[in-house]
Length: 422
Image 1 (cartoon, rainbow, N blue to C red):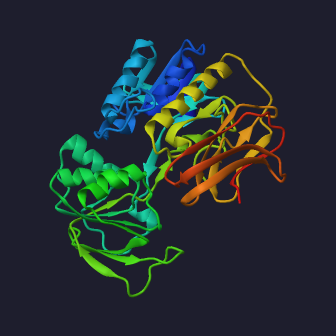
Image 2: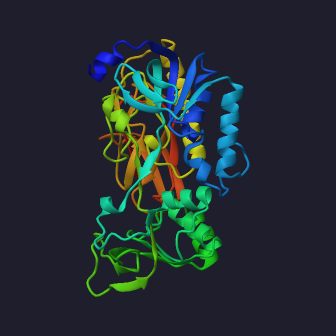
């Protein structure tokens, strides 16, 4: 008997809203769904505890916008989990969603067994994963001592493992910057952070607090071109790169080290989204959504790092609150015509969200990232192909590492473009 035949005999559980993922976006999604009318909300988390990546982020800097104070990642997770508990929201940990259909049927393997769950609406909040050495194709041998920054964070903060003695970090994403400081606290020597781009990939505050304050060098427009070592990393070869990111001959130098950390980008975890037929954006790696955060599949919503990578957990939580509220309303029968208008990224803007909006929508808040550092730039939202400007905002400084927002008060009737005013 095949799996389909066996599953057809299973009873089907039903819930108003099912949240896939128990991190900052997913927990907030559950909290947003309950007051919007969803009586039966279920959070499905594959780990044994709620909180997601927050549990290994022992540094502070969380909660400044949501709780109006700065707390650590585990404290942030605990507060959200406690709120979920007080609301009586259903939680299933140690549960893996194996499949999600376009009609919102989930196949779940949990500690209590295999089951089918039908949802009135689904909120995708699966988070993201890290790029690996194989994805960026670093030449050389395959010795021990190579870690992604997130796996290193888990080993050091949750398992009390010493990674090595002399460390090189490739990439200047926020986790890599934070781990440079953390490893310095643990007595390791961080010999340098090397970034392919001509600007840092992480927040400016992390560059200052994690590198400059500890005298850790940051070399921009540099990359690792070779890893050396047999059983354990013995050294890496770094080189400067040109404007296209290609190594420049003659700039190579050998840096002795026994550990290499990779902080070279995050990818939204959208395997389940693909199985449900959700349209994905090639620019963000996440779903294409409308202003309610609903994907191209009716009744399936997306938020947090599975939608696009956030630099601040609070923003992921706010997005979760909005997605949960919209999912609850959809499950309760509030429907509308499909969104017809498109939102696109124009000059010097990497991407803009949402990518679709309803005709006549107003009071929209659009999120965007610029493609390069800018100073004194004005961002405009205009009707695509026309000169009519619906919103304008001047920024003293814009960085690719920082998510920004702009509000459109007027009702929209044409496709929109978010761009730098030239």
